[in-house]
Picture 1 (cartoon, rainbow, N blue to C red):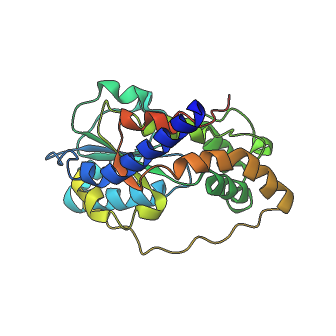
Picture 2: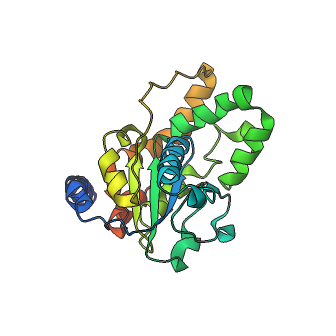
Amino acid sequence: MNGFIEARIDKWMRSVRKRLAPRRLKRIPQNAPENCVIVASNGRSGSTMTFLALADSLRDVDREAAKKSNFIARLDDATFHAPCVYKTHDYPQPLSSWPENTRVVFCFGSAKDSAFSVYSALDRYGADWIDLHFHHLHATGTYDELFQRDVLQQARQIKEWVTYEDVPVLCVHYDALWEYQETISRFTGLDFKPPERRERVPKDIPAGLKAAADLVYDPIDEVIEHLPRCFVASKQYRMTVEELPISN
């Protein structure tokens, strides 16, 4: 009986957090005159599109500053510049000492869809791209293990970013990027104008691998579904994401 009651309370708390998320968005930090904007993600979740759109916006207002915008594999190697736009797949801890005018947009989405995208990327981009992507995401395994466990550490990415509070982090689901353009613009201080949305092309994944992917990634995606589509990262989501299965 106690287990049933605890499960009901947990479900109620998740529902409350999702309902309160839109109110918290109204209290997001207002854009400073100059921000260093970092676009992070669990991979294949709209971060490249978001980075390019924000970098283009910065180029429109400060061409020289935009030249510093770049992909950063490890945030320990990054230098704070403002205004600037960076993209990364790193974890957030190196930002603990960064100035208050740091802004992070964390793009997240289905871990399984991301894994399918990486699987199909081998034919599109080649083995070198795969090796780099695995390095960027701190992979703990190889491409051949993609559907055996969460080798790309997507669960850890989401768990760490959505609860991080040392700098302001706006978490936006891939499907919500177009809906929350104004919120992203206000948060970053840059006019966020993504290209018109195009439906993702279904990936040709063998049936056996799809079944394997269900076992690995469905538990992660189930937790992701309990998160709001757009929200400010906070430790209040710790109870939600503590259920994420972290692979070693």
